[in-house]
Length: 349
Image 1 (cartoon, rainbow, N blue to C red):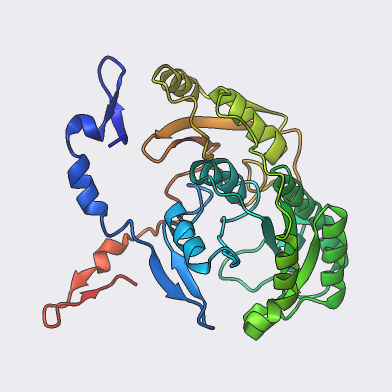
Image 2: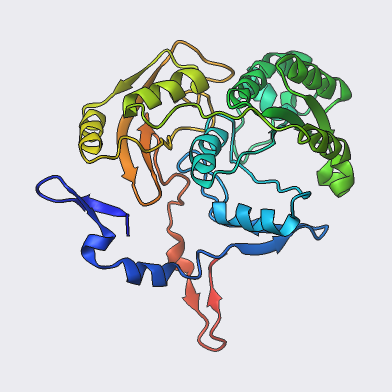
């Protein structure tokens, strides 16, 4: 009922309660609110629920799924929940939005990295979908890995800002060399991680991540000194400045005329105390996908700010970021139909 669908001519927010449609919307959502129970290849139960991309949304599984999982594992069990993409978007939103609303605090954070991703941030050649992967990513190249570890260090720094212990999981590919893995482990610990662990679960299943799991159990024995990045009492611009400068590494923030007008409107309507769910590229710590590694000195451009009041956050749009990326040129609805003989839905996949 708290969902805001627009503003009146007087500039006041109009909610679903105002329109009298709250009950009808609840009926539509009655099944969607229940988490989906699935399992891994080894039979470990998994809840999949409400996980939108972290570049355009919050990028996290639902609070409800986490609460059910915690109840099922008991006080001595462990729940692993995912925050999408890097520590600049998915993890920041996990801490500043999800933890704030749920009251739950993680005991530790596992940062997943790959040799190939670090090589890209170290200045590796451009990767083009549909073309063979450049040899720099499949052959040993310690210089690219070493340079890319600056990006790894920044993500570790971002996680530690929230007071949680960080463990690095190196998701190993068959082409990764022992020397490249060792170099990542060295740089991860220098940057403040508890440790970095070579993970081969893609080939060996759970047996391939035993070292990481044991280290995680040990890390969780002590409670974190958890803290949010910003208090909600800050203004919209002050919160945006905290995220931009401390998490992204920006020198400052600029606002379009449209964004300025939105800030004034949302502040007047009483929404300025909501947390921010920033929509920006996942390919860079900055707003520009071409700025790899650890860019600094840039100005973060806020193009617009929109409100998801029912969900409980404002979402600034950074640069040219679209909130519906990755759509095909031919809409999928052309292929969706019902088989008139069997009654089955076809064309969904």
